[in-house]
Image (cartoon, rainbow, N blue to C red):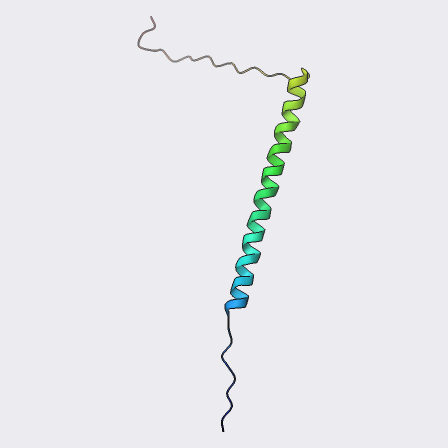
Length: 68
């Protein structure tokens, strides 16, 4: 009688690796979202209270076909 060991199953380690990668990507996305929200809040609060203001000045020096 010959007893042979069953071949190794790679399903578990592959699923574990994919799970870790998916969790890492999800964690990075959550961190990026939180940083973005905090950054917007850091600018919006002083702007809403009047402590911070900015002006966008768009003057064009190009001549349009209709200008003389």
